[in-house]
Length: 510
Ligand code: FAD
Image (cartoon, rainbow, N blue to C red; front, side):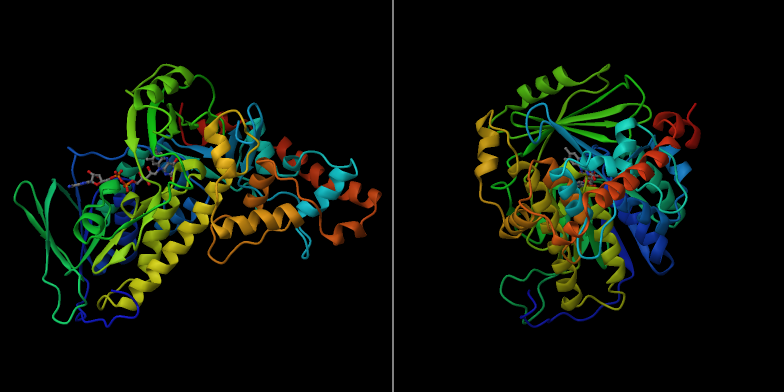
């Protein structure tokens, strides 16, 4: 059913929520709904120990702090429970070219003028030989480079976390159960549906009524949240919602992951190291390191990928390499009938910018904003789907940027990425920046100007001009301005302690 077809359903109040799946998505959804509307609802979560979870997903972005604030989570307790460390950005190694690197940090770089961002002044400074590297004007980036961290009062560091995904699910489970969520162990073997309403458009499925488990239990509900992971048991398999495949833009379709023992103090950034056919992640936690290789299975067999990863990790290997297959893309809609898909069941973008947990958070917060307490209306569904699509497409563009704008010429994989067609929305952003150094954040876009600028410069775009307002500053004034910004960064940096020692003190780890 779409916005133009008549809504034939009768409005039924929503009281019983059934969450299918208990990975990061299932438990984030359970924690959020129970905290927000728990007293009005009966919430049950079904998960299967036999199936298990994807078990990766350990780097986050700063929006998670807002989620934790809404849930009333104590940061120190959370960090101790999930063995978390702080994250100030991502270091991209070998992406622009082999043996070159840059950091995409969570911080703002320099100071903007209302007409023009800091990059315009910096570009002029570079042209006049007055400016240091772009990153020298960003506190988060410098702190990441020097592995320092502290909570600073007012306008302090903008940060996120590295966390242990399975400990995070446990932590959220405990919270959810305290707020009344009932966990049910079992494997869903049947999804029961009502017949389509009389007069419903051709092909329109009926609502989901209940889930039958392998032990015979039947769990009925009014609203079902599909958190069953990549298999998308409810939305994809049962309600037949198709999948938009983006692999013509994002060539990787597989990942292999292993955990290793730490070999040194945890650094406050994720490492993303490009290889011939994809890239490797390295995520330092308090008690271990998460590692993985994201690759294109057309170029690299799974066993070769596992061997490649094992050859590149440091420290004792703690787990067997685990291969995960995926298709980059998203479901055509993420809410259909009385089923909303959140997490991997709704789509997947590789973890290059650590956006999946953020998308789970957005999915459940939007559902809370549009919560259909008195019955599900197509207008709510359409609004939800449009917002989710929009956000996902912006993130997709940002991720494609990393592959497409590169000087790598060493193998066909990167040559193909360089020369491929990209979405028109991304083409425009790249061209605008290349020609004028300008970049504008779209409404509801996750990544702000500063992220785009860091990555576009980092990947090797050299803008052809800068805004004329920068020419209003003579050399002496510009040099003074740049020096002042840099001095502020250096002074703040000098106050920051070493990251791992700070984490140990803060989260109570001996
Ligand atoms: P899953 O973890 O797969 O959970 C599915 C749940 O459904 C499980 O509990 C399972 O038991 C249950 N289930 C399935 N079928 C049935 C059934 N028939 N009956 C009963 N229960 C069932 N995100 C980030 O934000 N940062 C990252 O750094 C990051 N790295 C990633 C790396 C890789 C390689 C991948 C693949 C993903 C990564 N992600 C990352 C994404 C992140 O891991 C996921 O978004 C997150 O784990 C959510 O997964 P999920 O809960 O949707 O699915």
